[in-house]
Each structure stands twice: as C-alpha cells, then as structure tokens.
Length: 126
Length: 126
Length: 126
Length: 126
Image 1 (cartoon, rainbow over the protein chains, first blue to last red):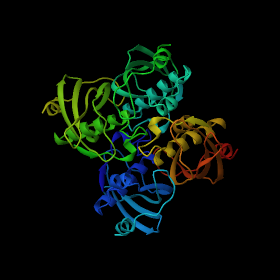
Image 2 (cartoon, chains in turn red, green, purple, orange):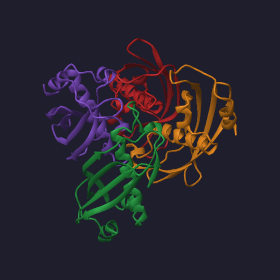
Image 3 (cartoon, rainbow over the protein chains, first blue to last red):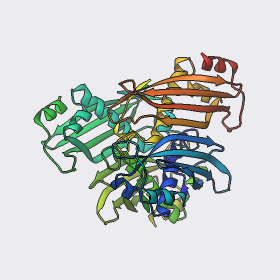
Image 4 (spheres, rainbow over the protein chains, first blue to last red):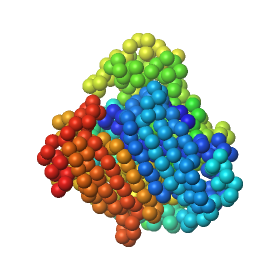
C-alpha cells in the first residue's frame, strides 16, 4: 500500500501530523482485507463490524510533504472476537517512519461484541 | 464563536489548511443554531437533516498556528426547504481572514428534500 | 484520479463530510500537475507557491463508504499570477457527485503575490 | 478541557473516528501547557519543539455526535529530554470514553533531540 503525502497530511511543523497516521493505518488495513476477499463494506452490510479497542504507534522518523510512504501490514493474532494488525511504514528511501499495532474487536451494529464468522477469521490470518 | 488554531488545523505551508475552514464553518453554524434553541442532534433525531448543497469561500489572509479566530455567523435568507448561512472570520487583530457562504437544504434521513418545520425556519431567521 | 472512500472520509450522516472534498480536490490538482511535469514540491523548494484564494463547490449527490470516486480536473484559465482549476467528481456508477472550481494565486514563501514562471503557466494550460 | 463533538469528528459508523482522538489529545495538552504559562507557540519561536515519539490509546466506549467530552490531562513523568502525558476522556454522563498516553521528546527545528529549558520541565510537572 503506497500513498503520496499531501498538504492535508502535514502540519505547520513541516511533517505529517501524528494523528493522520491513523488514516494511513485504516487504508492499509482495508487494502489488506480487500486483497484477501474481505470487503469491509460487505461485512458492515452483513452486520459484522470491526472497531478499534487499542492503538499503539511509535514515530521513528518524520514523513514530509511529497514523500511516498509504503505500509506493510500483517495480522499478529486472532481470536473468535479479536484481531491484531501490525504495520511498518517506510518512506521512498526505505527508512522506517513508524511501527504500529491495532487491536480490533468484532461487534454488531449495536456495538456489542460478537464472534466473527469463521471464514472471516481464516481470511484475516491468510 | 472563538477558537484557537491548533497544529492539526495547519499544513506544511505554515498556515491553516484551506479545507479545514469547512470545520470552522460547521462549528459556527452549530453554535448559531444552538444559541437559537435549535439542537442539530435533536433535529436529526426528529428526521430533520440539513445538508450542504453549495459552499463558497474566499481566503483573504492566512491564519497561523496560535491564532485565535472569531467567526461571525448570520442567515442571509431562508425558504421552505433552504437556508443560506454567511460568515466572516477574523483573527485576534481584527483582520479579515475569510468570508464564506453555505447553502443548505432540508432533507430526511433518506436524503430526499423536505420542508423544514416552520418554527425551525423562524428560529433560523432570528 | 480515482480513490476509494474510507471511514475517515465520512461523517455520522453516513456520507462523505462536505469539507473532505477539499482534500480530494488537492489530490486531483496535484496529480494534474505531476502529469504535466510540475512537481508541487519542487516548485515550493524553488519559491513558487500556489495558495487558494477562492473555492466554490456544489454537492450534487452524496458519496458513501466504499464508493470509488473519480475526479476529472482541468484548467479554465490562467493569468501571470492566477490559475483557475475546475473539477467534476463522479462515483463508480458515473453519477455526478460534485462540481467545483478553485482560484489559486502564485505567491512566494512570504505569501506575497508574484508572477509564476512562464513555463509553469504553459504547463498548467496543457 | 471540554469540547462538543461535531459532524467532522464522526465517521459513518456513527461514532467519533478513532484517529480524531489524537486531535482531542493535542487540544488537551495545549490547554494543559497554556494553564501553566507555557505557550507552545512561544516555545516553537524559541526553538523548543515537542514531537510525539509514541502514542498509546484505549477506546473504552464510543463518543457520538452531540456529546460533550471532557479530557483530564496530567504529566506522568519528565526527563531532561522527555515528557509523558496521560489523559482520561469522559462524556457528559461521566462514562470513560478513552484513556491515553503520549511520549514526547524535545527537539530543535532540525528535529534533533535537545534538552528542554529547566523552567519548562518544572512547569510541565506542575
């Protein structure tokens, strides 16, 4: 998952705003899932939602306007109700910009925890 | 409606990102309505939604990190289904930063146009 | 310029937040310029900045989570110091979502108006 | 530090977007510092910048449109070059929405680590 850094990603310190990395992580998770046949939209329509329970992120080096960053995404572990995503973001020179981990929980549209369908869990691990 | 400019409002040009003014305008509209006894939340819960149909904004001078900007908001005109908001944003020195106009339309949760309740229209004009 | 609609683009009305279209427009302008050999980053480093003076946008139909929107971008006119971009955004079904116009002015890093290099103007028209 | 939840804070799941909490934390840090006589703007102008090195956040319950959330902010520890902020965010009913910790490092405008002035450290602890 590659994406260019735009003005709207940056702040007046000249670098990507620390909160905007959460958007890169969402993009990376979505593309990870789509590549495994899991459409977040179709899951939602079917009442299977994933919400973020915990987010941890380390900022190793700044990304700046005009950079093209690449996010590698993988799944660390899953349970019947949980999935943990991990990521490494590098810039166009191969320098590590950030490392992050997201814990997500499967819920229904009422935000109550529920088990994810077993094929969803299998695909997430894939 | 006063608000401080934060890092997240700015971009790497050192000034407030042009798209972030839309958030200031939403804040100003909301406070304008709340001050007239119109809760956007209560209206939504009652099936009365306002959606933006057209937005026009002029950028007169940049706002920078640490500024405190003040938005004056008024209603130019209303119809049974429309309301036009206008705004003037100044910084702490009284310098005009921006002027803007928003055309909104009343819709139901299905995004179909519908008439707004007459007391809502009256309060919007007030 | 195609891009998927993510969660972060949407609001609790279920559709893309009206202010987030400004980001799509920035992306589209940037890609328009890059395709004509104009790197915004290189221009900035050379002291040629473009700032938004006026933005107008009409919202024709909502875009929703999971949509893939495509923005067509062109330049309406240029002067020695100005360029006007126009855009049409469609969704994956060819439905027009939005039309917009952005007036930009060439400035130096001090935000004072200055003439753009003639080859920049030529490429913008191309 | 209280703030209303606006449309732009939410996503199509109907709740505050997980990445937008980073903005609430920035606001809360800024107000914490201002209340102790530390202007982030004045520090920046004096070459004392604080950048986020690590962010951890737990999401306990969703915040929704129209909520008014309150963030309690404190400093866990400081060193010559570091400061750790902690936060608890509650909604208007006193329900805990989120807990978070931010590790920041003092740098110069060149993003190289440097010691913070001792009175800054003292005020941060206050």
